[in-house]
Figure 1 (cartoon, rainbow, N blue to C red):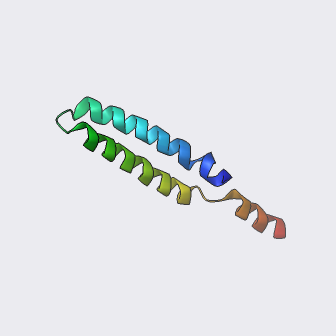
Figure 2: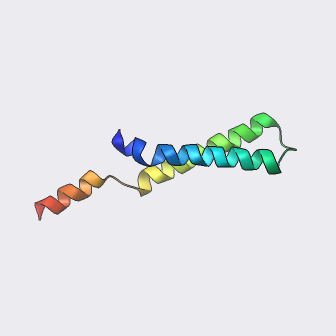
Length: 67
């Protein structure tokens, strides 16, 4: 659970806020629900990517302790 809360969740929230702001500012011709879906999709995608890229530190520490 700590791994999920440390990086992916804050990154997903930041991506959602920034993408919603940017879409609302620059793409007003797109309907509001569609802009929201795009921002949610971007947040979920970035959260998944960061979950795997930032890995678990406890695995690294266990390998280091065994040496």
